[in-house]
Image 1 (cartoon, rainbow, N blue to C red):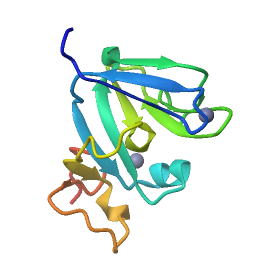
Image 2 (image 1 turned 180 degrees about the vertical axis):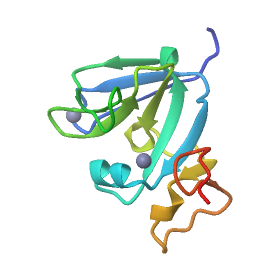
Image 3 (image 1 turned 135 degrees about the vertical axis):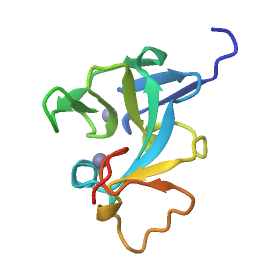
Length: 135
Ligand SMILES: [Zn+2]
Ligand SMILES: [Zn+2]
């Protein structure tokens, strides 16, 4: 479609690239143990797009954190770039975009794992996965 914004990004070495068109569905943070471990950082910031709005080029390898889902990374430099479960959405790591300050998260998941020093004002918090309520 004409007029759709196109944002690009990729891994640190540059062989794995993507282009994302239009507006994302949502932007969030995740503090879960899997996101911590795979990224080596204490939380994951990600941007969710409709799958058909994202074009990937280059080689990626995947790890399956749960059956049917894939965390895709560059086999050369190891950068985490995107996550997909094969459905109609794709989750791109915010840090993989070429531009900074393009997105503002609106929610955060797994706040029970959030570092106590981390300040994330104005975000909708979920104790575990988004939409799940634990008592
Ligand atoms: Zn790379
Ligand atoms: Zn997570």
